[in-house]
Image (tube, rainbow, N blue to C red; front, side, top):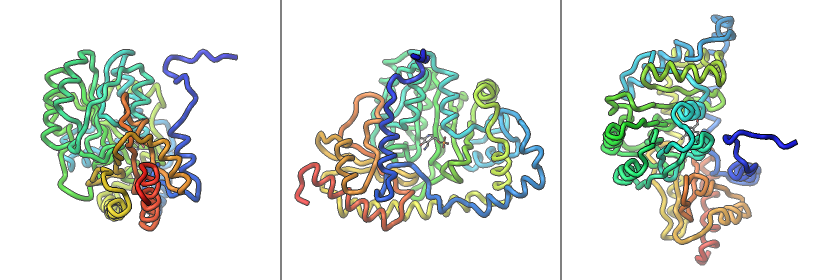
Length: 397
Ligand code: PMP
């Protein structure tokens, strides 16, 4: 029979990114494609220990249904973490979600009617674009430079789209570019949003993983009118399989959002919330994050040196001070999907730039991940990639 799906369901069954990850997942391929954290850094022994303690001390509670807003012990830990980041907040302003992906979905669901405008960085996180599309948003991409979203371009986008509901931004070590928005642009963004009376969705999964340069306060720090909805997650600082994230926002918004979440999944896994709360009580998560930073810093350095050695002249790339990604721009009009096919023949993979663009695609762009491969794999993989680029753009190998 023909299923009469809603407009939210994409017509096409194509999954180009899924296909890329599948090909990249072959054991012979050195893959810089996924955004996977280094699994050898997951604190397995500590999580095992606190899991046993949760079962011993509060098994009945942890296995029971619980409140959609989340486990108070975990929310309290998040209040403390946010304080460290310069955001002074209260437990009523914090809710737990099933990862930032759910947070993006819930916020979009709460604001977007079909045809409403959502302003995003160009390029941006492709799974956020999928969410916004599913709610029928008109997505407007704003140019970036090395310092994040350009504020002159944002002002124009806001002026041209009076039906804008919110700006979606990833200010720290952005996915896919690895770029970070400067403090003055963060302040300016709040000023622009205040003037136009629109919301800001600040998606910050990577901010804690700064391995170089100085910390910059979140956009939420500049928020005077409770228009910034701040999202973060345990995926990159602990483990993505836990599926736990959080939202910090105005308390009445949190109440409404909790109702929406209740309809979606009743509450996030209560046992996991107890485990992570216990982990944060007993261990210093910042010590754990420091270990992650050290390893990623080293891998990023190795990748950068290999890029400088093996990529042809004229290829541009971002210089991340944290997070998981480097963005590459090859001059000319090369189709990075074709480059991807050439790379697979050389047993190396990346994600082509195309799916990260909300509208017009800039050719020759792609994303590299450095968190998930060993230093030796990074050196070998980048050498192979350099050869494939040279072959594609016609430089003597
Ligand atoms: N936002 C961004 C920018 C991301 O890169 C990701 C995942 N890599 C997410 C949200 C979703 O993360 P989570 O695992 O918390 O759902």
